[in-house]
Length: 599
Image 1 (tube, rainbow, N blue to C red):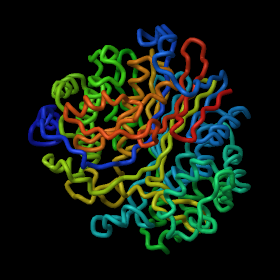
Image 2 (image 1 turned 90 degrees about the vertical axis):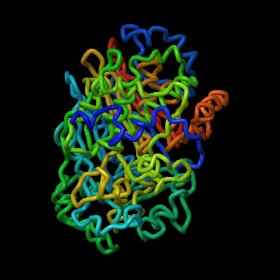
Image 3 (image 1 turned 60 degrees about the horizontal axis):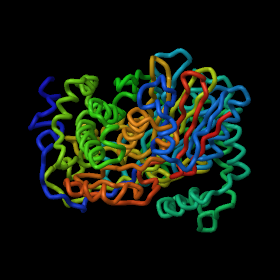
Image 4 (image 1 turned 180 degrees about the vertical axis):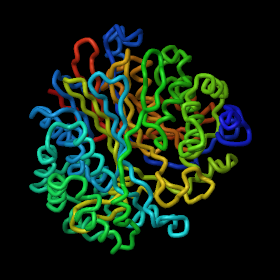
């Protein structure tokens, strides 16, 4: 056991262990993936430590386009203003934060249909009043029982009706409501049903995403009819109507999760999938169950950071942050050459462990978070030279063969996901990350149910040596990882993001923005970010100065400069509770259609 977790081992596991001081020439021929969103919330009171003592200096040092939204009774932040409003309306009617996030989730299915919905999966992190740690609700399905190495090819797993995991969103939403909610599903789904039936206003961002995904849904008759009426995307300012989805939400509100998992609605979904050549079965839905879990956690300078346990990849950002605890990050300077070099190198080491260990069931994952292990990993970083990083997954060329520098990955994950959060006056706080996988998932709508199905098999490997190898009924390595942060044993803020394998990277930066640099929620969300792609290749938002990226290139990185504010590096949303007054603050990302709504 000890040899498998040796931080400097040369023969197995983490590919960076023997290459931390690599001086192989940098290349810009590596993968360009599609990262997504992070969310953050920042403590401000002086009692929270040195990073939060000089609020006036923070406001001038880290300017933001938007203010942090504040309220006393409730806060919701999501990637669409109508979804945030739906969650807030539920709380104004007497509901709690769980009622609010389920209302937000259902509404996002309508107004942001390419990111998440009933045909997808997700995770929920829930803080209850007086709790010393959150509880985790994992509603991610497993591979269908008929999906195997023998029955699947790579193309099957990328798109089309064979590409899906068992959808878990309906089970997750209704299980959360049943255990911790206070309102009936009919009220919680009411805004989503109204928007689906009578039409949701089409935003400019809706047009952008629907247009970009038009080809992927063109083979699905019902999806094309819904999202490409007349063969064209809807126009900004128009109305997007989804009456079939409205009927499905009503059926779920009346029949509960049993309507989907073994009931008539589930049988309709399965029949549509199988008629199109898919392998999802009635048995897959009947066997589905949500999982209640305890989180993993680390301490960082007085904060306690929680993340869902494996097969969720959250321990990657826990490792990254813990590796940097003893470094004077403030002295290095936010997004300075030294800081970004150190951050990118720590990300490479943590990503290596994530690829090797996330799906392993024969180890104690808390060993990967032990101080002595991570201090030894930190010593592998060369302060002057970039190491060759892994790819995003086990079957990426950079991961399987560290000599590969110019080859791209075996496939490109164009992942679309969403993150949202809510908190109420009682002390309850909830953070959720959920997804369909790619834009509109596999591109297939399940008949007249209005449900777009996911393509999460695309995140599973066909290489039998991979810990994340495909097998019937097996859970996948899950990149969705909604964390929460406590201080002095109490909830302080939630933080989360979409972004496929970029999720742990974006969350590392956002958490450090708050905990090390003292940013507010909105500052932390808007701050420019980087994203490691594979090998030496990394993206950097254009607001990072050219002289900084030039200096990183001189150290062996291959930095690609992207737009000043791009969803390629995330779209954060989050909530924060002032520990002295109980005032709730929310932040939302201008990289998406996000807004925080406070009351």
